[in-house]
Image (cartoon, rainbow, N blue to C red; front, side, top):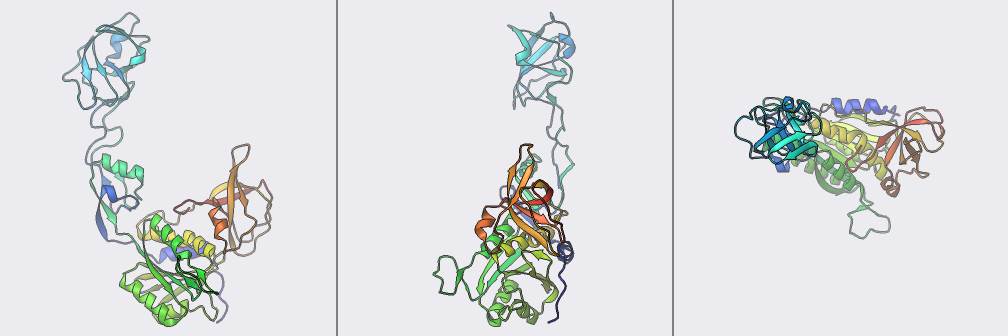
Length: 411
């Protein structure tokens, strides 16, 4: 096979996302089960929030003009509490006791804080003249009925769910979760809990990939382990088709060694190859293609390589399939180097690093000494990937750098 030029990371991501069509299947999901889901349509407020003027503080609702002088007093006429407002209009020279969240009755224009009030039985004065409009949340301050408060493609986190609830939606229109089938490959692999043979190791990559897919709003489908044979791989591909997977992720066997059969097996099954080598470290051997409507992503077998490729390519693909308009957006952040680093070659580097703060409060990224792509323990102790662009010159501690922060769900 003739050598194939390494594809730059941005080009690879653009081609992966460009080949993906957002899922158009919509599911109605109960609000209580919609965390992490993606809205399929704009969500329109069915009510105004707050629906009426409400008090932002405990105190007295009155006309500011009635307490314009130190000696002025108003007469207490009643009370307004949350869920139980004052009935009627407050007359000039009167006030009502009011509590946080309570409706502000007609006839008043301010709330005098209780700590600023002079209370003389039913007569109320002020330590200083109140100003009109203070401590009142106007009707519709948050949103109004008919307003699109959440847009299609929005990922539903805690704040978004609270907003949907306040808009009075008990059911949400969500994109069907992208189905991502995950097939580990290799005779050397055994399932966790089994006793490995003398030449075997425990399969770990699939669990990280599945967790990242789930965290991105996809539905991971574990296809288990396929041995190094065309028959085993073809059975795995068949199971992915039966599961109606939107994406088939293979782990391992993405290179061109004698036992790297994944690309050949996929080609025999009809895969249209897009590309298979990327100018990145770790993670150079990565297969991308399509098998009918199913996207194919063949990740490297080394654990850290597969995780970095998952974060860089698979998670944006899941978000694109979910309808996220910002899938693949640049997630880099500025930081300061915590150690000297050598010049880079033609491959984009993703270097595991720990984060600290310097005396000026700046984020400092210090690479781990060991960067071998098999070292999961190093990855688990990392808070970021230090990004080194192709052909970046040598840099010293204290220089500016770019990082991709790591979290439980990805970048």
